[in-house]
Image 1 (cartoon, rainbow, N blue to C red):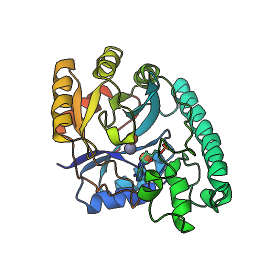
Image 2 (image 1 turned 90 degrees about the vertical axis):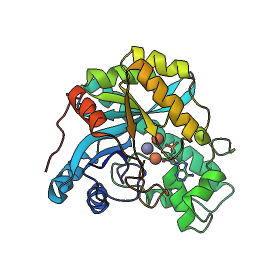
Image 3 (image 1 turned 30 degrees about the vertical axis):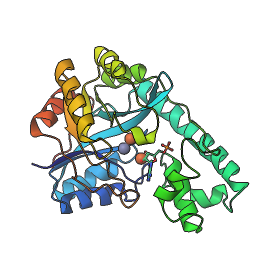
Length: 281
Ligand code: AMP
Ligand code: FE
Ligand code: FE
Ligand code: ZN
């Protein structure tokens, strides 16, 4: 059983359409995958149809931007009701502000580089959540940088003069909203330090007290010591442990199935998730 619970499509900053992600998952020999686009469920319907066709089990999900004391947190949500009003309102506010923020960043970058908002829009899918990777793609297409990675190491880095933050709700509020919507909140890559500041361990125990269900432990941005520490915390707090690729198509080096989740952990998530159905072939 190969289970990978963190995949992105063109509904956010992945480079494969939701249907292509499902086909690629089947080709990679995965049995069960979750589509977890940033701050949206827009890819679910297309992914579900393709998953049935190619014989992959689909766990509908999302990766919700939030913050803890000013530190950015990514909260994976599995099997929540996509029409739950509070969650819908939070995600739509975040997406709106991501758009404003991306336009602002591009206007700043445009004063030093040959880049316009129209160039970036060519790389954003219909209804997609806009992010820095789309700005990177436009810069690559215009020959301003060689890759997404180079763009993130320079103009798009959190410490760059062009960087702007976007709105995101408090993590505790998001955890509660996901549970209210019948979903299962799992903190994504809690020790991915390259992306900026990390949340303290105390954040994980506080969030566990308000309904956090799991920790993404096995992820390429964690070294072995981080994984051991996170596994220990999960054991102490009774949290489910997941592992996943964080696949973004050609936008990142992450390969489908490079880290996986145990069948027992998947069963615990499916048991707790009541907001929508798992899609089975
Ligand atoms: P944003 O959500 O707009 O703040 O942009 C962050 C997103 O950019 C994350 O979801 C990552 O998937 C992606 N990202 C971060 N660093 C890199 C990198 N070095 N190469 C490619 N994508 C990256
Ligand atoms: Fe991403
Ligand atoms: Fe993430
Ligand atoms: Zn992700």
